[in-house]
Length: 360
Ligand SMILES: Nc1ncnc2c1ncn2[C@@H]1O[C@H](COP(=O)(O)OP(=O)(O)O)[C@@H](O)[C@H]1O
Ligand code: SF4
Ligand SMILES: [Mg+2]
Image (cartoon, rainbow, N blue to C red; front, side, top):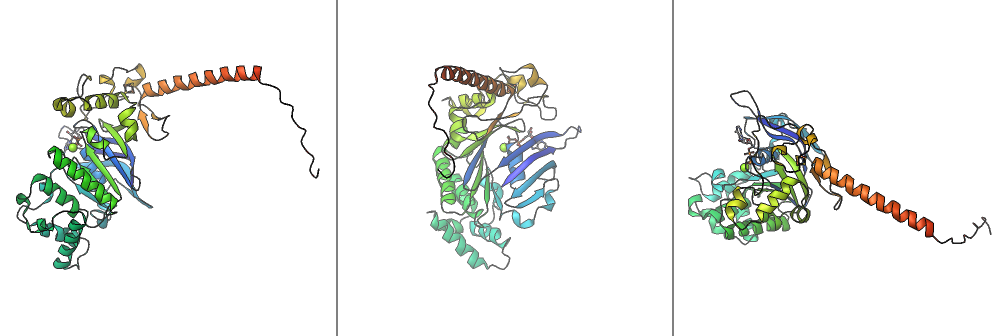
């Protein structure tokens, strides 16, 4: 599954659009969990709403393409998305499970509705039997089907919604901060459940959105860092956590390691200022007013996507990273030239055997 050059803006009364997602391209490969992290207001939920095909009508899709395997659609009109994609190709696990549950219905009614939306001929009995089987295969108590949402703990409610919303085995589960309202042990249980859903083949890809980076270390294969509507860095989880390249990622990682939860979750240590107003984002690199490495070019020109030289996978969108890479390459070239100079001077002359004539 992938999106390419997605631009999604909210209209406002003043007429200036909020450029919540602005030129985002992202691929989610088979068998992969992609984490998306970034400060509040950087466009994560907007991206989630487009990826899960649940965006509200107030969101204007200005451009972009969306693809599943060999099927591609232009995103400028979400109503063109085939109906069966929602729920069956892609499902959403929202921050608060309560939002997707009818408080007056039992969990089994929710399970029936999910299956019935795509299999209108299924009987209530068969749908509920399928949900029971699924819960049991994941070692969750099937009796939750008889409960009303308010009778379940927050953690159990969130796990139940994760299971029921994936009953149709969607290709991708988009989880938008699904654990941020949970205590630590419920968070852990949810992450384990998501891993199990993947291991048992019920889903094949997850996009997990959070502002709590350490949580991703144990779940994601790759991490994308968002700032002000753009992906500023993407790479393997190890690379992002151990060797972040983009100045914003570096600060995010540094604050994520802070033992004080107030800093870890709500404040980015060491970066003055706040994310920009997305109605009028700064030109060039949107991070430049807060970046201690900012150069003149950063204030004028959008930074290039600089490929990660070590892993060969992923990039950082940054002029400073590009300059460092250029210096490193120039240094390596100089060293190689030096080695070449030494070796050619000292290279022993090896007598070459004359090439044998064909037929000798
Ligand atoms: N319905 C809306 N109308 C106008 N602006 C919105 C709406 N929803 C979100 N925004 C704005 O879009 C930007 C991105 O928001 P959001 O996608 O919720 O970010 P995140 O999930 O990273 O916190 C923010 O500036 C936010 O204020
Ligand atoms: S492009 Fe410039 S301003 Fe932006 S993060 Fe890199 S160095 Fe900082
Ligand atoms: Mg959000």
